[in-house]
Amino acid sequence: MQAAMNARLAQALGGPIWAAAYTSIGVVVLLAIVGVLLFKTAPRLTDVSSVPWWAWLSGVCGAIFLTATTIAVPRLGAASLIALVVTGQILCALAMDRFGLFGLEAQPLSLQRLLAAGLLVAGAALMSAR
Image (tube, rainbow, N blue to C red; front, side):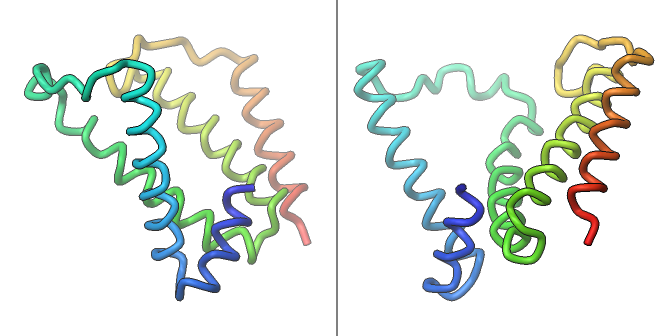
């Protein structure tokens, strides 16, 4: 739903970057309010120096994802977009598991997992075929 909503917002605001920015501002405000209400404190900043450099790029990933889906949904349609996103996430997750990336414990790449990923790729291809 969010990609379709942002695509419509992009038309009104002058582009997908502005729609993604507006959405991100809404996320920050909402989460800050919820965080203060739930935890009764501001974020803890005592351990930020121990966070690896790549962990700080999560916001960049979110911005790219939000903008890309805003651009793609009018062209691909919602179902094709979601099929491709889920398939891409699974393929990336398999690589992260296999190689223990981003501090995760390495997980074996089994035939069952490869077959499941192949079925997702086939499903995304079928969903996206014109």
